[in-house]
Length: 318
Image (cartoon, rainbow, N blue to C red):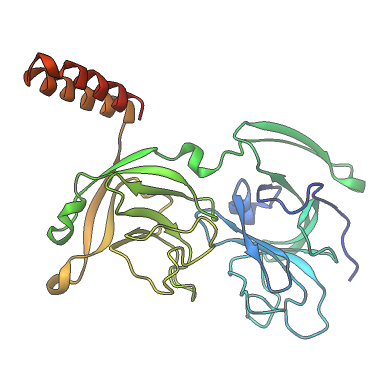
């Protein structure tokens, strides 16, 4: 089959993009934020939707028959980095949508994809909006010879831009009661585009791992003693196993009350524990700390006032 005409991205491989134009059956793809996870064995970039098991990747032969047509695909299965063809290993060409192309270096910025809609393959004009800004933008794109004009208005803010900046933990079992009262501050994002946090005692981290042992494990949030890699797509602590203090499955964010699976010592083992990660207003917390230090220093004597002022300035600048 001949490659379907499409417009390639002008600036090379995008780090992330938002999709629009899917049919009703695949409306779950619309507005999803896809982040580059790495390159496949063939050297093409592959992408994962944040918070969902949805992928975009290039497959030279999706059925592995040796005579298939190369294409970009939307798939529910994660591509295997050790396979040159049939990257999802199902022995057939099964996916949400395909875009036949000889260009393997990047997905099309816009073009007509063949999409499975209500058990029929139909042509749908999809647009990939490169997400490089936290500012809402509007773009008008004409669909080549189809004469269809699509106007888009999308907010391209990554998750970290709207994630809570500071979380306070409570509810840990007795074995890990030292975690109660710790605050976790937002540090940035992982390669997956998810926020990650570090505790104020510098000993613990909360982050999302798409595959904690690198062998196909289910995605989860974890509470760990190891700092996550900001470059790895999976097994973020690099230990090749799922080793941590607690995990939270099937959640878009670690914030709020939720039932975590926590290790509670050799006698109790792994238990379901209701942890709460409450959002904290850092400004008010710093101000209260400063006020307390001022009172304590003043009570210690007139000579301590300068210490109190210095402490107030330091805390307020955090």
